[in-house]
Length: 104
Image (cartoon, rainbow, N blue to C red; front, side):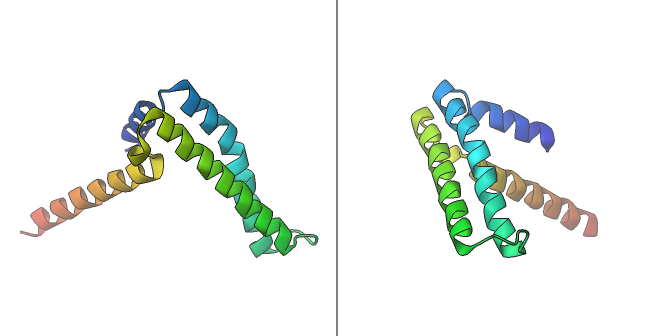
């Protein structure tokens, strides 16, 4: 499954602009998620709702960058979360078929 995931990522991130937007958006995405999690986990004594909202804003900006990159590449429908969901779905379907086959 790891090999299939890497192959999928390489095939959907070929355009240089898409790669650049993803490279710039990834740290923004991670920092936004970290800010949101730290607010709800109470990790910092100075964490406020403004920090959580800023984290949500950063996350939204990063997702917008990812979508823009895929729009430039012309493959918005093949964004990583969609493809990973399809891959997991196929794997689960395959496992279910194997299990049914073994039960017969």
